[in-house]
Length: 432
Image (cartoon, rainbow, N blue to C red; front, top):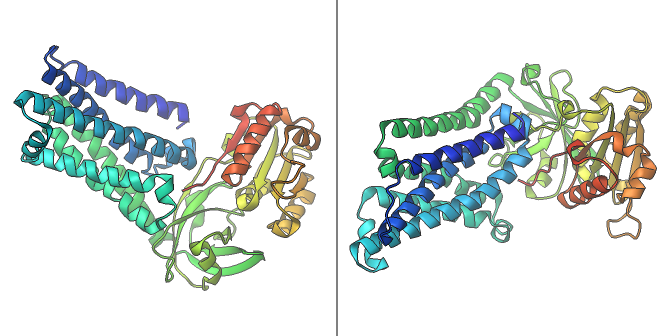
């Protein structure tokens, strides 16, 4: 599913929800009616927004492969802010409307409203969503562990269920059998997708493929490759450039699913990932024992050969972002001179899989350049002119880009200034 199609579908849904509200509006100049009308619209849009947020994270393959997991995560984060704003707006408008209607103050009105079970459920659901939103803010997110953040995020499911119970009692839904059935069908569909792709499929894959660690190989300072073997891995249809979410069933690792790209094509029922120690979990992976059971969900990601639109391709990697680029460097179709790989690192000691890259370049007659030097050096190897010097016909290339967020942003801006159309720059940024 292309991103434009998904955006259009989600926008059409929002328009339909607004239409459902509009056909039931009874125009009135009374203040309490105006508050109530605003509360109904914001409530419907908030309920629809919660469904959209859950759908974006349901890991539906057709969506993830077309849109990209990184873009879905950004849309989810951006949409979450709007959903919270709509929830708060709905609450405030409903409270003000009831207070004006009853001729009482806001505290008394709030206490009376909490006496209705559906409204109490909605208040609890809103509180849970606010808690999730607060812990997702950057300032707070950096101070909580991934496990804590993830556990709090699971409260979104409870909040959605409470909101659904409240919405069925609202006038726009309860007043129309068609609206009630449609609203219920939407919630049931999203719930089924979540259960299937986030629970059933991972369990089925674990039982079918029986993945186990076979080797942990040191590749450089704080970098290891993990080789994982299983049965029938061709059924996964994993493509170079894609990633899985890995859960290693070993003490202090089993609780967290980590996203890592394949650093080599699937061979003889063996998957390989290459990991840099950048946190507690990645450091512990250096001590993985052969035989450790592995649960892998995927493949995910859209940074594959399907994105390609031009004969010539530039692969641009930074740091451990070389892992999907290395797999693509080996497998992307192309003749001599069609492929170029630029690998950015602070120094030669930080180059990962160097021997493999040079062997692939020699075998395929592809260009390979290392862009070495600290990021604060006077010479910027990612400057537009520097890129054009290395790749004279740069504007005629498709560019695949993977690296740390700041490097990826700077490289994207430089590529555009160097003449590469933005639609020919293909990137995924894993900041989960």
